[in-house]
Image 1: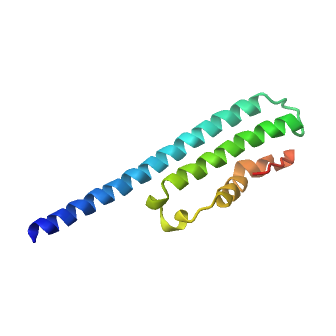
Image 2: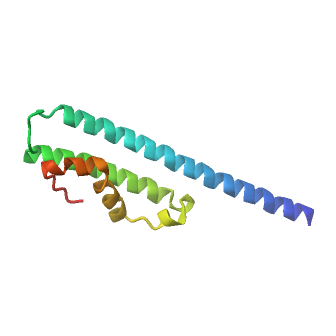
Image 3: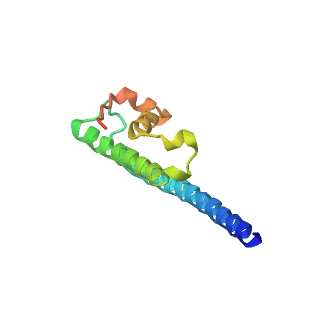
Length: 119
């Protein structure tokens, strides 16, 4: 009986450690994805003319590609770690990620450029 209880306790510890490790992996992945996005968008904005009032079609396509990769990467990280996320995030859809990204402060600031991306 003691061996069974010990085995169940050890399995519980291993299971909770795996969940914690998975959450840590998710957080690390999101940090890495965010850093890459920041670097790509910084490089993109540095290439623009400071006096520019709107994006050219080519610039819009380029920026939408950067944001699209960011959205896809965030969703993929959430999808791969779905079981270890809080219940409210387990049901996260790609559209939820799109909505969060598009409602971020950065994207709201860029509204003046009239960016139209189809994700």
